[in-house]
Length: 323
Ligand SMILES: Cc1ncc(COP(=O)(O)O)c(C=O)c1O
Image: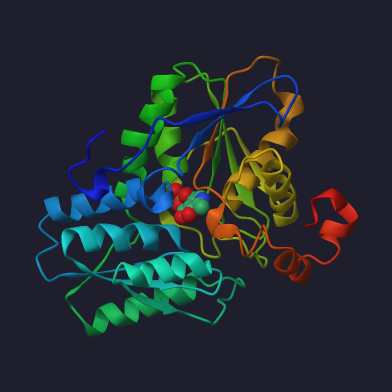
């Protein structure tokens, strides 16, 4: 592969057959973390920017603004640096310290909001800030991943298409829900092209995306504190709500097998584990891993961080995993 610009460094064809989640089937884990900026969000970011360019909304000198829990912010920082746009990322204290440093290294402005919204998260606070900034500065172009249909289309064109290229007749697809761009894109494409596939959506306990009870969450990626309007493009056969303790246990179990994955992947795989009894032996199972684990070294993979937020989890539930 010889890319002509950094935004082309997307690896959409990498799967790992995981046999340790259940004894009777392999999970074909679609690893998105090898793409530039390390996550699935580079595909959504690039596609949303291309759509704005095609519509003539972005011009030289434009400043893009977006709310992100980290990965889209990092992807947009890189894309904007490569294309010559200024970028402001609005995030919250759950952003990983590494992502924060990298966003700044790409030259983007980073604003961290500290006030929790009515549901205990930060999303509404982030959005309100962007709305007030847009009122004051008409040059700002808001990507708005929570409402932008191109966030869904990006995954129809890339993620879903790649899954079907490698697994034309999947039995089960497990997809995590954040903005629901991935879930919406993958589910719409699969409903048309692989109608027998059962789509299992996975979210975090405490997320309100599909009507759950609001609660505190620490791990970025999945879940929202305000339902994203693009969720109406998602369709699924089952929704699994996974508590963050199961995410941590799964991530720390897999890293001891040499597989260092991000938090949302731990949540999705915990979902596969919970659902495993309903999956037939030898089924074709695909799950999406939005990022790898490096940027969680100071959180999920750090004993002190885990012990502070989830007292006794490591000692009582998984003593062999405490470092
Ligand atoms: C690590 C991680 N996992 C999952 C997601 C959810 O993807 P989507 O926003 O397409 O629902 C995101 C989104 O930012 C993410 O960063």
